[in-house]
Image (cartoon, rainbow, N blue to C red; front, side, top):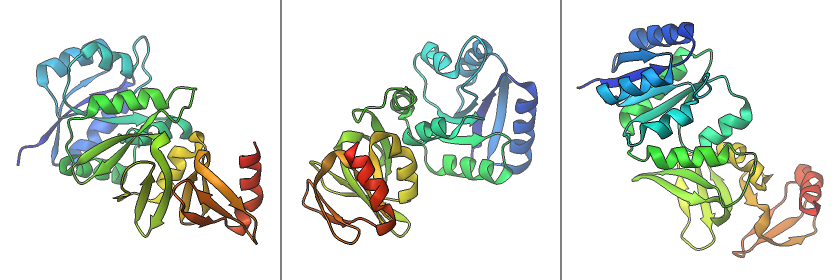
Length: 249
């Protein structure tokens, strides 16, 4: 089996050396073919070697990882971000369906990312980059999109099209305004983390709702919401006070 060809890009030499050592020792299916500390150098290496994946630190002096990708023009490789970013930026990376590794990089996380890469190749990197840029903006809009993995690849869905999401064991069932529900292998907690800035709220252990599509709130012990598609969902008692503050605001 042909090895996955990788280029590592990070302005810190120690980070590059550390990542390479871990990849060489613990990820036998991957071959590091080049490393670069400067984006300008990285672009030349990418054009010459045509890697399957790059491990990219976004924040680099003079030229960010995003700008480097813009200047590359056409490219067809996967990206795994290596980052010390805060929780907010990680959510943006998740929305875009990119893999990421938090520094200092744990060996197990690295192995999982490489294993996932070998099983799920996709040519939709540019679309994911557009979503990532949008979701990292300070301005949050439900016109932003989320990348949702399916059996055929990825679907890029505007957040405003999502009515609510229901947990089903290790799966989540997504209900849309104008199309059939979609079952995906993602936990509800993952969607909660990603969609919280977009006026989504987890009103129950098994339900995450888009607050923009509540048709009616019915008072009861905890209460119930009726969504625009007619679905009735209980509000957990412990969530009632916080929930009412959110819809009042």
